[in-house]
Image (cartoon, rainbow, N blue to C red; front, side):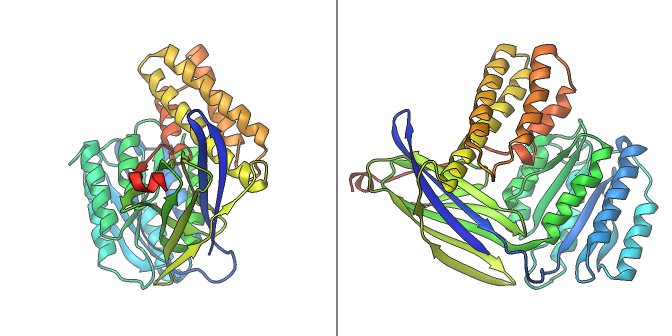
Length: 410
């Protein structure tokens, strides 16, 4: 796995600012380690018909992509949660067992999401596959109606699961699930939930998740940054972060092949002699690996410089877009319009940068939906707001580290 750290100095409203981008890229060659995943499938009444049929087909596709060394299990839940298939290797017999169980599913009533998460985690915690972090993958289309149902309860559960070593991924379908609940259970383990507009999109979404989960080469990826020459420094992505002495520690989660994980840190500079000591760590093949990586200062218009600037603009865009949707849901149309214009301005600047590593099209499509909703009141607001809050739009200032006065003077 390759780590890179680049920094660029840019003018800011209160003086010069330093921006550090640190990213990890997993090499494509070499065998992957086996995955251990308990699938949690919602079969509540709202899943009746096309949603459940599409979910069964998508999960079956996920099962077919698994290798004989992977372990999968199946929890189904309505008003009750049941471990329908225990965690078993995905050899011919294991796949047959999973597919038979999927074809036997019928919709029920109620949504015991909290119970399903606890049950699925307990099964994972009874199985050891050396070098692998166990995972829960949740597919749901509704809000919990049985057992704990508050955002706070699920946030606590998300922290508890992450601390126990279980990583949670989630896929929300359509317009009735609670985005904050899915964020609460996934963010503590370094992930974010995915959104699908309707049954037709489930197959593609599950294929993307399979590539992420079956291509994992490292877990517990963490970045520790000890800055110099900064008045303060902030992690602008939504990864879990905390202050440790004079360093900011950011938890990136898992790294998969062909998927780059990056984090952007920014802050006001106190002088020309700015920099940072950067230590990265991760678990690979059951071993803890640590290394110091150098910070390369780059020119504003270099490829890396445009990438760093692009990351910042992307975060501005997404934050403004999400806030615009929330304002629209509160019927504060004037604020929603102002935030939309802010997002559109960031998108224009992002296009002008031509940073190859930044995918601009996804933002164009979402802002087009938002513009239609703001101007004509069109669109399914609950669905579109959930789309804006999903993994593709997860961004905010997660942590600020104030530096000691003596460090500022130096």
